[in-house]
Image 1: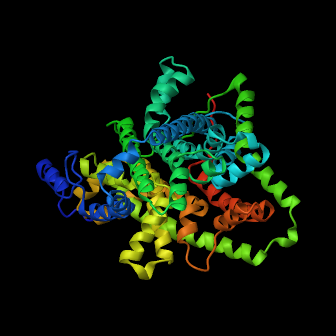
Image 2 (image 1 turned 90 degrees about the vertical axis):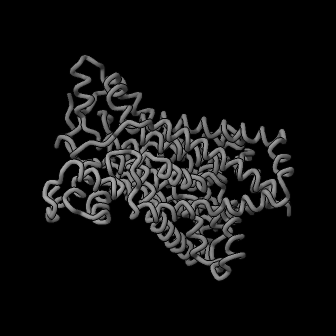
Image 3 (image 1 turned 180 degrees about the vertical axis):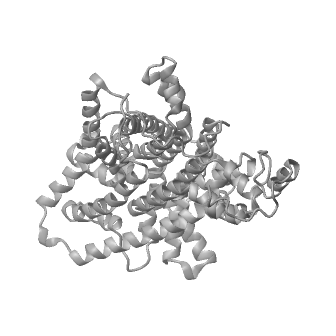
Length: 543
């Protein structure tokens, strides 16, 4: 607080009317209708424009033959079946991930689960396993799992950390006073959690659930290996098997429409309540809830979940590495692919996070239409299959920026379009819990908008920014279809090398690349668990 207010008080204590006028003039007044500050608005508009770039390609390609062709594709019975199948898969995966993610977050932050800090890190590790690696592992052991059940199992096992991590971070930061008051009124631990804590988790649950839904809609690797005809697999097949790419573009636009609807529902689910508070709460540990007779079932549940999400992929990698010829592993090629993967992922995470900060902060601070539109625009590209984003950027680069074709900037731009919501959601959830009153006080003390952003807003939102950056890094490491098409000439990543070997059924050759990819992704996943408080060392206090 001292650092926030160390600027000279040149204006003294302003008159309330002058103070309101000052705050409204810079766009951070108490009224929700005030304009966003220019220092955030301009980069947020630029970010939204970048996210909407693939729509240029889709609109041009879809409507170049007229509205009649678009209507014909949309009214096909196959399109309706495809839409229902994809929505059913996304909704079932999202519901399962919400239940698993919230339950694990509570067990690892509020209960006396044995080894809860270790389980918190283990529960986050499925983020290090690409869906195509998990799908390959399951299908190699249980070929009959192919189809919707297999796609559901793989996507749920790999996606629930998108809910677990933000919910766990929020639980760590919540003031325990609310639950303590509820308990003092005679409510049970479950009733106190449901009535006092669960409403405060709505932003994190909504952001995590939306990420899972869009991830399930846009996933390519798992549904392809499981031979489940979802949007991504059908669009990819249409692109590769026909010179007429209009149907694929129309399906891509339909997927964008579904994304807009999902983002709208996510915004409605957050409501208009305020989730911020002044200060960091009491300097004391959270009250630990004793599980009692439920301790053993909780341990069995977490162990079984770890076995399904991590045990099966690890067992498959060990098996295929053991049956293969170790002498066939090209170590220089493996190390080169690993370095390329890390380099591309780092650039993608850096640029994506920088572009996400203004959008996330505006979405948390302002409730007007413009901030909402900018936030929703950021989610559009995430719902598009990587193959669609890649083709759209190839189209734009060849037409308007040919020197960048098959260069690193185009690949980084694809990562930004695809994974911008991962950073935006994390930044928004963290900024929503930081008190805007501190920013208003700093402005009233004479600080300029950019100074307030640098010294107040960004430090308060730093946990979310860091978690979002690590999450984007992880996802860039695992991205496959866009990297296959856009990687610079002469370069290869772990994902593309593994996919190439898998395509010719060289499973033993693919195993080292898959293992290296999982190991490299495990470290940032661990750091992400630390960032969300999974390794919090504060002493536990039992009732």
